[in-house]
Length: 138
Image (cartoon, rainbow, N blue to C red; front, side, top):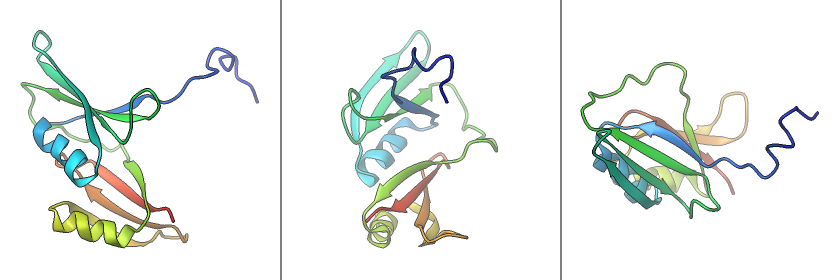
């Protein structure tokens, strides 16, 4: 069913998701070193007292990326109860979780079939407590 906006949104795509982070360097390390993303760009905004860093698995022109926003004078964030998680597809979830745990990642739900289904999933947590779901994609 077409919505009134469908013509205006032809060719639209998801660009990025933004997370507010407390320690930008720790977050960049987590997403690049542990999850294999690349730091695509980082910009300081002294007048606004914040820094933006964009990380992802490919160029922003063709891939959805993650924007990490660091507000310079802010205490750690309350994550609230509405936010869910980021999801990443991985080829071997058991090997991935073992490697991430050995590298210092916090595995909060070990790999295994999801309840009421057959999909094999796991959850890890970034330095701010945001959940990252790993989904086995063979």
